[in-house]
Image (cartoon, rainbow, N blue to C red):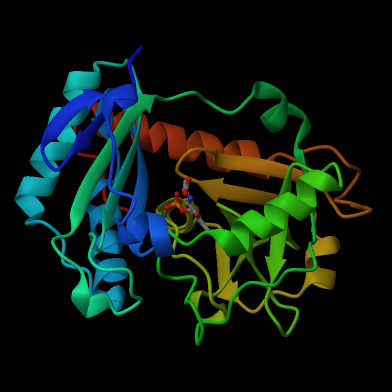
Amino acid sequence: MSFVVNLNGTISPVEQVTISVLDRGFLYGDSVYEVIRTYGGRPFCLDQHLARLNRSAERLGISLPDQDHLVAEIERTIETAANEESYCRIIVTRGSGPLTLDPTTAEDPVLVILVKAYTPFEDWMYQKGIRVYVPSVRRTSPQALDPAIKSGNYLNSVLALGEARKAGFDDALLLDRQGLVTEATSANVFIYRKNRLITPQLETGLLAGVTRGLVIGLARQNGMILEERDLRLDEMLEAEEVMLTSTLREVMPVVQIGDHQIARGTPGPIAPRLRSWVRDYAQQWVLGPAQPVGC
Ligand code: PDD
């Protein structure tokens, strides 16, 4: 198992890599990033992650390296790490410059690719389900730092998760200022209620998760009724099932929100079914080109 870092084209063990304290990623979170995982040793849904990286970079005015170069570097770093399955984080910072907020003063963007062994979440989380807290901190509005941008500034999520951990919960569910459900700190949310799979619409202000897109595609392909719309917390509390989706979690059941148990406090059948669809899709993709369904 190895943990390596590709810094602007040079791959080294993580302990040997250093970056300037004047880097704006360090100073201001002035960077964009993606988290990818491999199945069968290959980066899964790479095109979708790179498309989102492009959208994020465009919104911040950070220039990305040439796309083919980026793909080649990601693959080379994963190969060098030689893990059975890898976690891969791609970061592009605006670079460094004088100590000023002014983004036009930055020098060349810095590309960092971190690759370490993929460690799955613990089994109990899927078997028993997790408990999420509703923190006082709210999701930033799309008119402020738009949650659709996957930037290096994750303080909103850090504050929310800090509140949740302090209260003894596993994760936090962020509402917007109007009280609408947006997403968890690093995952999207779905509920299952009255034969419908429901997830907050992107316009609410949330990250367009690659796994969210995949789950929507697979659910539709399998004949489920899918709704992307406004979702209020009280409706969520009445759900038969609640689940989180992300690259690293796939689909994970939630059995408690604050003091309120979901259904009877045990996971239902829908979350594991959706998870097995995601895993089957990934396995088919490993064997050959899988049918595109939104990932
Ligand atoms: N997080 N919402 C937020 C705020 C996220 O940070 C993430 C991903 C998601 C799910 O997106 P996807 O399905 O594309 O992974 C939703 C990654 C895993 C992370 O930062 O670790």
